[in-house]
Image: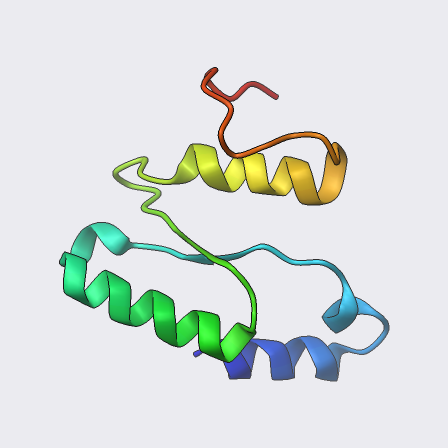
Amino acid sequence: DYQPIITELEAYGGDLARKPRVTALNKVDALDDEERAAAKTALEEASGARVYLMSGVAGEGVTQILRALRTEFVRGDATEEDDAPWQP
């Protein structure tokens, strides 16, 4: 489902499709470990980028996504390995 999203961004025009992005696979709480690995690999191959796993409902991976967003878009010095709880 990655390519239709990118196609929509490109069709929208402007520089939207070329802007930096963080790619996440959501709802991983519904997948077993094998399904997670397969889905992550497929999305990494499709996107050519790192893919984060997350579940908004279970809260899994949310901190890592927030840190990745902060690193990519706000503070170039943030790291995923920070042990402190995420704060805006």
